[in-house]
Image 1: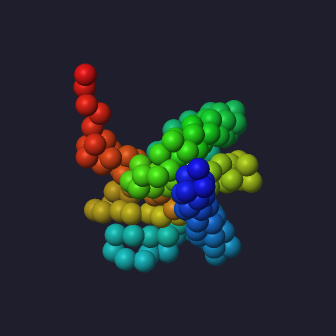
Image 2: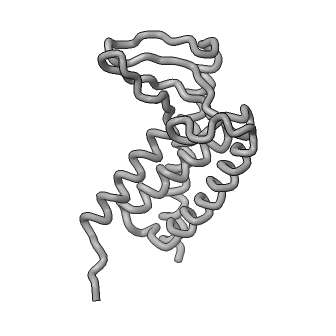
Length: 161
């Protein structure tokens, strides 16, 4: 039981580290950029300050404000499920790492929604004039976490009976 609790605490620490890194990077950009200001870093990457009131790809960004509470509630429900899954799989490696990254990313974006009514995005990749929608560290953690979950499923598919 103690080992299970210690493993759980390590995974929650990983989620906490994601939150801290996410918030530090967002506050740094917020303190250094004006809204929509961008700075070229490479030929294919800029830093920019944008606020996204919606979800991925600005989904529901112009919905009138109710979406803030919808996305906060949804993220909190999913976070509760992720913590439950972490408890059940704390002694494993790949799946709880994935769950921790998703948890940290989800809560990092919830903090933004509660503080700013939107998520701070600042990473802007582009090629040939096409810009991928700006995103942040939390979004990256969620994406990597989902990728690890998929890898887990491909590596250890449930045997059908």
